[in-house]
Amino acid sequence: MYTKLRFFGFSEGTELVGPSRRTFAGIAIEFFWAFGYMFLAAIAYFIRKWKTLALVISLPGFLSIALYPVIPESVRWLLSQKKVEEAAEIINKAAKVNKVKLPDGIFDEKNFGKEPTSESPKRATAIDLFRTPKMRLKTINLLFNWFVNSMVYYGLSLSTSNLGVDDYIAFLLSGAIEIPAYALSIFTIDYWGRRWNLCGTLVLGGVACLLTILMPLGAWRITVAMIGKFGITASFGIVYIYSAEIYPTPVRSAGIGISSVAARIGGILSPFVLEFESLYEHLPLIIFGSLSIAAGLLVLFLPETNGRQLPETMADGEQFTR
Image (tube, rainbow, N blue to C red):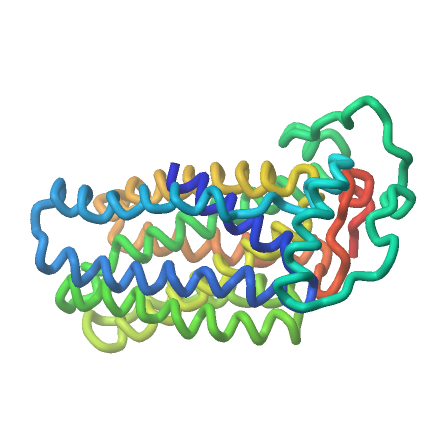
């Protein structure tokens, strides 16, 4: 339930803003993840029983149910489904709150491509992401990217006890490094684009994982490990926005959803990869580093989305190339 709400909220927030605000809206929510990460270290320090800890950190999630009446439906989705009147109601309310006058005739049916029909349009599903060749390749690339991001992210998060310092301090530092990672991402991806930033941060995280192997326990290992966590955190924040901009409106939520599934699989496998340490001490870091670098290089085959109009139909998504 938590995962569903998290990714629904991200998709909804991205669709409600224009290109100039998409970066901030997509990454700003990640700061609260980082604050929660650090707060968890403090809570865990005082609550040592894991069952009690799980209960304490899970209960606040039920408060999100109270937000349902005040969250508007995605205007882009409504328009893609030809529900113009419902979209107009939300836009008019937003214009009134922001004291903005809307252009006359903005909600005329002719502005949305087709005349209204008595039949509802066919609802697109995640399967449609694999029906056409270009969209299929982009989707597989993004799924692999989410898989690697999650595996490496949680792998580094779960291995903070190997840094040679107090577990709680290491966990706190691991969360704190995410704040500058997200902050820097907000500025860099609008200047240098999504593709090169995602590639660069993944490669940075991968190289840092490999370099950690050479570092002795203590300050140097912590420094290099935090550089790796910085890179993979920044890439995780960027891939949210990048994916939402590549997936077409009718399947954007579904696309983010299956990307989340790929990420969860990576997260599930991450602790098992850490167990490979019994075979060879540095094998987990070699796997994390190699996969991260590979995922970063594969990003270069995806289209740049910075400042471009989001694909509104499946046809737009197929033609959305470099």
